[in-house]
Image: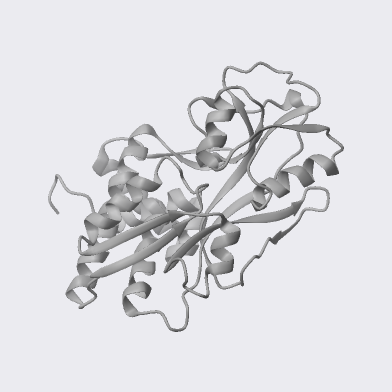
Length: 299
């Protein structure tokens, strides 16, 4: 092997360990033994000349070098698969309408879509940011989009330890990402905050905002709506301005925001999951192949 090149199998294993959060989880996903996965990671780190993943209380976390390599690894793996599909006659040529919840990786989604278009330059994208409830309702009609990525909530009762999906649109969607939900506020804000709790919200049609109100009311925490935003970007700006607190998924936190300290006494929150919705029975080969390609990039 070229001394200045990486092994594709090792890169894919690296991605799997990062996404699963553990060597055992990665081994299950890629159908290899834990010892084989560990050995591939070791060889990749030897090739890179530095540590790429470290253990933490929350699982395997990337080092700064690992974070940089991860972006390249995803692109290399996706490009390899795109080349294979092209040689197999799977050519993505046409128009594709994508609907994405604006909670999904707000800082990265543009880069992900740019990478997708670079892999499939003949594909013309039409991207819409929509509420998950609307994406779920419209998924089977194809009226507004061809491929949809929606947020779903895990209904976790902390007292009972039970967890069930907040299933808005069927059970056959594909999980592509799972994140913690956190209470967020401005990094410049000092606790304690006002009473009743100033809450930055989105419209009540947003399932996540409905959850926030329900959690606060269940724990008998008084609140008032201090600002109502139209979308996640507006919520981020309002929070950064110190107008209140709200609930966000981790990837939606900006440098101007922090997780609220435990001293505020805010109740625990469930996890959020991002699902790529299933295809319709009458969809074209173009849409089906594009969905599979997007799945690899969205994870």
